[in-house]
Length: 294
Image 1: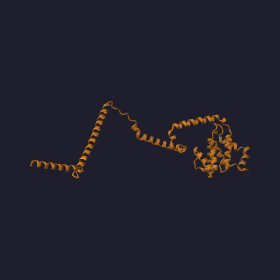
Image 2: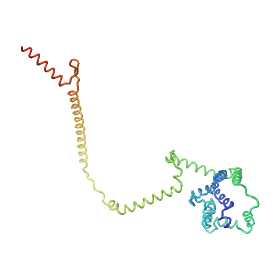
Image 3: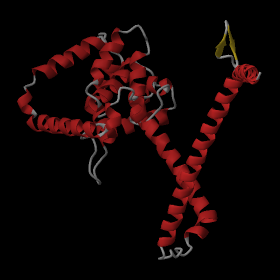
Image 4: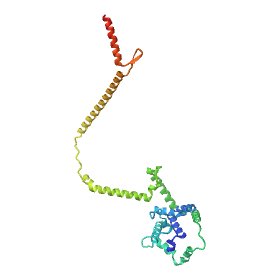
């Protein structure tokens, strides 16, 4: 058991791959892509990512996936993975799925086959060939064998589309898929719990005294508010009139200064200010009057 399940080997990787494919059928395509990629740990990283989605391990916990962790932790991880396989749980009183699997694999009649697997005389097929073989077998199965599953998937897809139309934040262009990952939701739930605990403590220590007071009595004489409102409106009107008068007075004062300081009136070939022009006119009138008196 330790040789097969708890030490790094190709067979152990195949067992993990088989379990991941049973949990998520789309994992087979990821397996083929990992086999074609240049990353030697591509398949292990895909398994670790699936384990993180199931909240069983971390995305960088490659030692657990490769078989370098402690046997107790590896067996616990394998048992939790087997429990996630659809239809693998048994009712209470019966043997668990892991025990049934191990008892069947390590039965006396299967020991020769197990030894042959541990020390094969022929090299196993490459990973991408196995995936292509599984895909070809699944493609040959008629869809009529799963009518209930097809109807269930179609109804689920319809409900999800209706839910997406109701949720505006799912239709935005800036949505982040990682925001709805289990780790993000778990972090958000933890923050919410912390805030609720803080508010509960604040309520018990400071706010409860104010919240337990009697409701203040409101006067029935509402006409006083109407009179105050009218007075305030009249005051606002007078303030606006005063503001306009001040602005007009400032404009008149500014215009008067311009008339007294800026030359605007022609006298001969030059322009003169209004006081100079008035003084010149006064002098002309005085000369005319003196001439008439003589």
